Image 1 (tube, protein in one colour):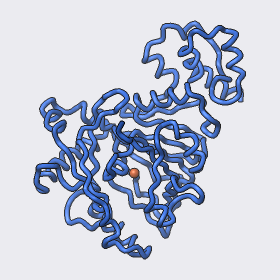
Image 2 (cartoon, protein in one colour; image 1 turned 30 degrees about the vertical axis):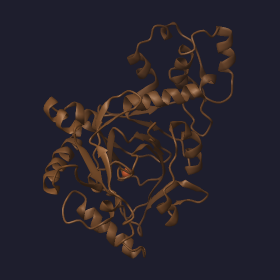
Image 3 (cartoon, rainbow, N blue to C red; image 1 turned 120 degrees about the vertical axis):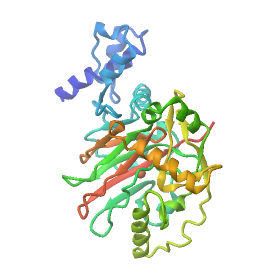
Image 4 (tube, protein in one colour; image 1 turned 135 degrees about the vertical axis):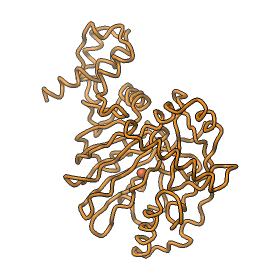
Length: 347
Ligand SMILES: [Fe+2]
């Protein structure tokens, strides 16, 4: 407990008080004794005054790679978060694109409870219909791989990029993980875009991608993910789902290739090959050249963080400025994740 308190004192809690400067020390010490949130760990120091933004982030978030991501320490997500802590987490996501909380062990229901402040939580009815959600919690997709259920997500993608409104955050809780393998690779597509020439930026700002959910579940003759698509079709057949027609109800959706974070207006590349059909106003053949160019940029090692999971990890990814890939190198070991997704409904 002492060590937890010590780490918290150097973490979030100071900031909470910096953001409420009018509180007297007496009020601060009263708040520090309150149960829940982070306030109970507060200690004051003169260094809190006149803090700039880099100090702000260095005290509260520990970067996990030069590409993206930060570990947040001293937060127990099984308890209700106060508003200030929620605000800090939101700011951390804006800055680092992905946040890691170790040792949380949350199930789907707890995730729904704690992540509601990030936005509306979506329910994926087709997963509910297939019995792939947590009992009593239809918002939580249970992603379990074992001997009978081989991993099938070994392609770069943004979750739900073929939905009408692309999702904003995906939240993953690690329930089971082998000692070796099963990492998730995450690319910072804001950096990918930032590193492009002004000429390419101008071109991509004008472009829109056409996506369809069924692309991810059909055996395509070309394009990235075709081998995976074959595996998925095979898997669906073995499970008794009809691969033909099952996804026909999905319509094309069109999304800009450059997506802006509505909170800070920063631009990022938004491209998801498995569901991609073509670029609006371009032929399929031409579009495949753009796909190759964009995918080569996304996978550049400088932009990628490889997350080695530990049981109990909770990871929040900003889907608007990242792309990810789940390595399928652990078969036939068990890997189980619980996932919820937060949507971005336009205002
Ligand atoms: Fe995914």
